[in-house]
Length: 334
Image (cartoon, helix red, strand yellow):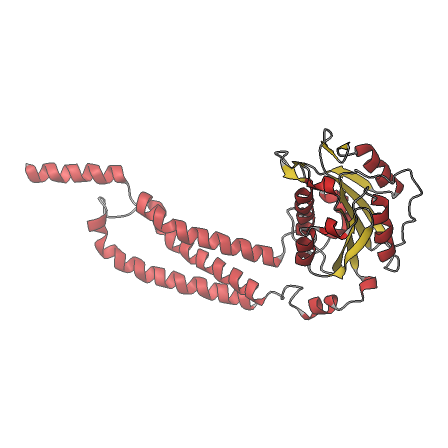
């Protein structure tokens, strides 16, 4: 209510000022325009300018009075203190084996697989709309070790993914199933259906078929495998390392999950499910008051910026002005 009243008062005030300016400008119209008046559309520009100011006033007041972001509000602070067992979780199972250093990823095919894994995870984090999500990271090579458990800071997750985590393991064959076991153990006591597991790997592993698969915890909501590397691959450690799509599809099916080839594209939104189902606005959601305020500010600012330019270029009829100028010159010469 306050915003609406203030915007109306702003409109009337600017309109009154424009009216006063209009009266003063009429005294010099004969000097500025050939026929003594500007173009017809110029007469409505004061109303447009007043409406633009009112739009900006209303939009800025709405944004100023909008609730604080969840991370800064009391509710957001409470979410940060929420018991880890009741939050939403993302557990990243990151392959840090030497094959992840091969440069055959990305749109150009010259990016390291490990760097591509970070980019894929960045795209996921940018789409996570929920505020009660905690992040965990399990590094896997010859063994598996939890690196982060229950962090609320996405920056910590992204920074640690850039560390040379393979140095924490002995050299040998990659064992991806070991990483799944450790990730499942971490999430064993969390709320049912609260955890999304995302595995970033090229599928170059030695323990598929060597034993059974771990039993998923009740907290499992979604299991996603993001494949990296090309089908052609590269030679390393006595074998050709390539994205093993058959192995990755088989592993995903055992956990009722999905496999996506992310070597040159990001994970699709449907793959990460409920994580993007928060309050973040998207083109398919109804227009909220805050979105309308942003649109009002943008529209008002655009009009205020364009009106002087349009007045300068199209403020009067140039052809009529030149014709009248030639007529007066000829009359004076005669």
